[in-house]
Length: 256
View 1 (cartoon, rainbow, N blue to C red):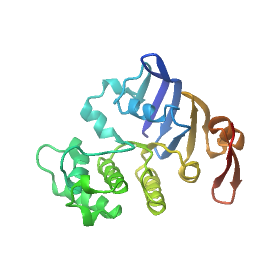
View 2: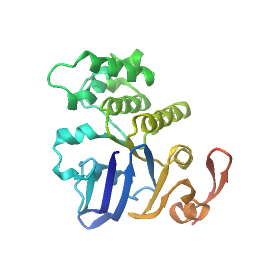
View 3: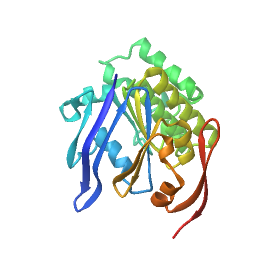
View 4: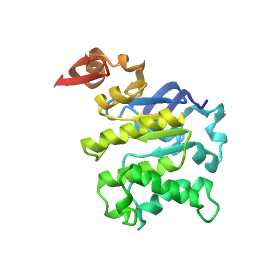
């Protein structure tokens, strides 16, 4: 059982508080979606979990260990982070960019099993034909798939994904979401994701944490996203419909 626990976390940039008193717990086999408007603190929270940013107060633990006590190598072996936009500053092929995800497990030379894993994930994401292309020559959506592939081969216990469907067309939005869902179910990892697409969040998530102005408005199953909450958090009048499978949301108009 993998457990990510966040207790009373706060983060501030000088005089501006981004979020305050955030607490939650995520377990193996659970996909949690952080939703809320821009500026709610979603991306900052993911960066604190991956230790890219240092929280002002509070604690983050993985399986009972404070992440501050983990070495960079230990952290990389249990937490993978997929940022919103990943642009390489130097020439590197798609294959090598994905192979970097195996770095926490390598000494000097990749093993055959590492190379095979990279090819398997490239095939999953339909990236094999561009394996030898420079990542900087790809479209935004293609680069996004490469970064997701890199995170998958890292074999994390905890997967942090910031807006994974950014730049992707509808077909690949669904494929990426199904892939993340399958990883959570089959590998029994924890996944914490941010998204602005409430319908994707409703369709694929086990749990929603709804943020506004740096505080948690609601935390629970998809039923916590009500029409009243959408109006309160987003300032949008909407209608929620619940069929036999999953609920879906229809936005009607912005209020105010």
